[in-house]
View (cartoon, rainbow, N blue to C red):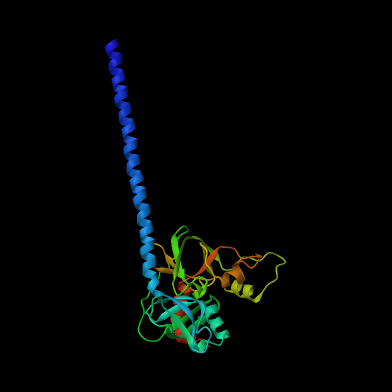
Length: 277
């Protein structure tokens, strides 16, 4: 009887050791795997941002008689053949209002000299707040694009010049996620005054990417890129969202929005069929 109890006790002890050993083994594997995945994801984003940087430009003007000689208006980026620059329509309109279209320039980070690259307006699209500029001279590094709608939760980044050139001609990167795909304008509550902007967007609806990310003044026209591979999926836009998406708010939110890159590609195709005036 005593020998049988000793045998049972030995079996229970051995079984307990096995049960304890297996979870600890799996826990170690899971922990190691989790750390590796996290590091790989972070490194993916770092590499994606590095790929985007050479193609990001500051949009402004250069005139020797100006004080200062360089005036900043927004961000942009190069796609396609290396001479096609995408930015917001309102950025170009601001240059036009300042009577500086004759001196419009694209400023590349790390470039020699302060005069920037000469460029001209190829096409403008007020409906989607997109403009296409044409670089003079040699082709610049161009970014790849992805027109597929990103899933909610996709890691993404923007790169541009927050606060303009006051922080120097150094493009800054910000990281976030795609929170949702939303209509450009919300249905209006009864009693809300209709504006021309709202009427236009209701007549020609499309969608924006809503981002869990803070974009600063100066980021207008920045590329929104996929955090995995650096492909451009949208164009950051602050003004459009304020006029339509958040028109009922007393103060703008910290939510950011981007216009899908497809609208820029459509404008490139139209090109001379819809010239800028």
